[in-house]
Structure formats: C-alpha cells, structure tokens
Image (cartoon, rainbow, N blue to C red; front, side, top):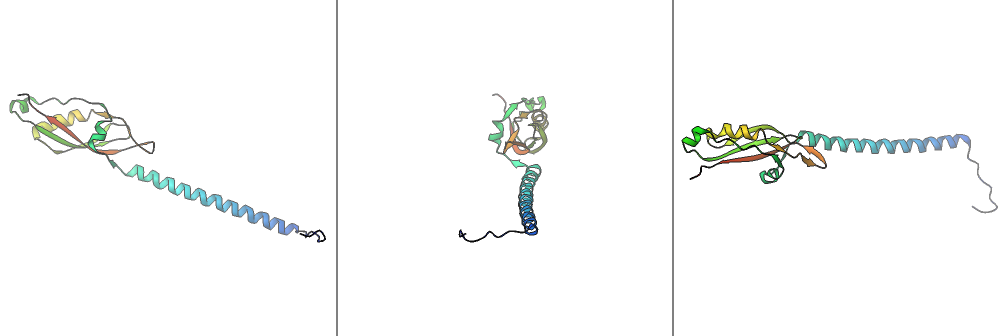
Length: 146
C-alpha cells in the first residue's frame, strides 16, 4: 500500500459473509477431524472386542498367578496311564479361564486336567493398555514315579 492511496472500505455485508465463511470452514474442519477420530477409535475398539488374540503357551505360563495342581486319578494311576493332556483355553479380560476344551490326551486323565485348569488364574493380558481376551494352549503332564 502506498502512502497516497486511500483505504478501501469493506462493507458490512462483506464482513458478515467473510465471518460466516470462516466459521463454516472452521466447523467443517473440526467435524471432519472428530469424525475421523471417532471412526478410528471405534474401529480399534471393535477389533479389540471381537478379536481373540492367540498367545503362545510359554508367554501365558509366565502370567499365571494361581495354579491348582491336578489330582492324578486313582484308576489311571492303578492302570499306570501317563501322558500329556493338551487343552485349548480362552482366558478372559479378568484373567480367569472362561472356555476350556480338550484337544488331545488320555481319556482317563482329561477330567482331572479340566477340573484343575478351570481354577487357574492369570494376570490380564494387555493390548495397548487395555485387557483383552486371549486364546492359548495348556499342557498338563501326568507322570508316574518309577
């Protein structure tokens, strides 16, 4: 602007239009950012709620806080039955065993293994600071002294 030029006066109608345009642009940006944030958070939250993570047995064994030793069934002991009962377990967000299924092992030892492992408790498994449900395998080994 030169010293000899006069200022151009912006009329009140233009001021209102410019102010409205700025407000609309600001609101649109804010709403867009919020919508994107909510969509990302919601997708992440849904993924955490619906997805059960599979965690290796060794990692979950390190998180065990309460372990009940299985009772060797007397009939199996008398018949000298030994072996490993493999279980598939779902550990809930609280660390409790919520679902348990036998995948292999001697029939005579399965009930004992299930009864004991149902009482086990783990530290909650955290993903991004939030507890999540996990699936793992548990091996219960039965051996007889010689």
